[in-house]
Length: 133
Image: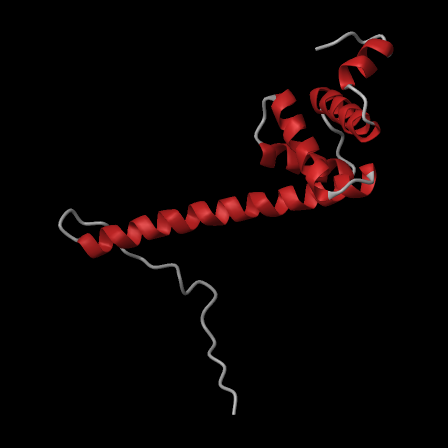
């Protein structure tokens, strides 16, 4: 016989307030804050994985180089990685990338393909007439 226990969707949503002398209440508040932080991190991780998969399909590369490409874009745009991932996913769905992200994507793809061919990306930039960084 199999027993199934149904829990309300928000069973973890404990309503406890930290009172100065209530250590248990303070622990609950601290745990809720940590739980919220972990949820945000997980949501960010999911969109990064989704963007990474899209880059893998478009650039025909493995997960490592795709992740490196997204990190490279984030560094060039001086933006957090989850924000770049959101922009890439939105671009996949038809939202245009900003000019800065378009340039960062183009440069990151150029470096990815140069590494794949065993070339130095600075040589590729010089021969294309763009100069260097």
